[in-house]
Image (cartoon, rainbow, N blue to C red; front, top):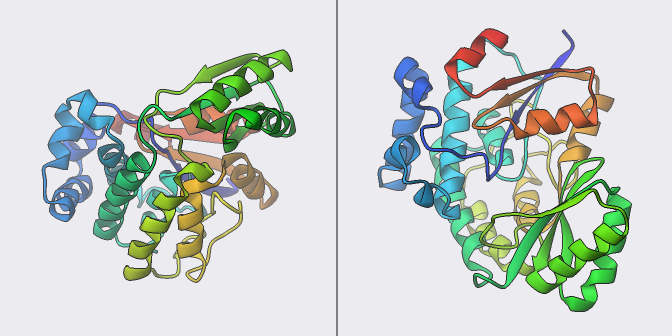
Length: 303
């Protein structure tokens, strides 16, 4: 086996009951869920295990629940894997920084709760939208956004794979961009079920609010190399604050992160946390890799 990268999911991967089998079977996982409750001052673990789903979908709840579940699963298997790098998609970058010991878990779970709150509240509901564009190149989607910007702000928010890009911005501009994309040959355009236009300039204020907290917390040099969604390069202690601020309102370049790791000789990707979205994206980027998804206790046998 060559180099191993661990990767962590972002918002949208959550489901009621995630991580419960790890909580019941691993003391290391139980400790993480209990620490999350301590850090936030309410029973987060009850929401994770029992719902309701509507509460789980609230951005200020979703972000800490995914981080908590991802880190809890990692702690259960950390002795079985020796990652050479860590990265995530959007929120998942905080999970990566936590397992790399750049940010302490209790700090991280509190931080992403604030991040979720600021991202949710920056733009009034009903103003913004996001959509996935499938079947066009990134360059083609950039051109679509330029043409649609006559109706308002619309920007690339996520580069997921060579033919899957997400756009974000004012609702009218996003809808217009979806029409243009179809005319240019997009296979599908799917509006995403989100409450705000994430990763675009409309929520720059949320990044600025988050920065104040980032400057107050203790950040250490990562013990495992961690890739930034903003630059698709490895972070350092000195640039983590700037990059996490920008990550709120600029493009999440998941494709760039995977390509950087492929350049650096990585051939094994382990997705840790709820869902399996990232495993599917990596397969689209390059097929002949070892890709493992650890979502349930029974998945550990695949390591």
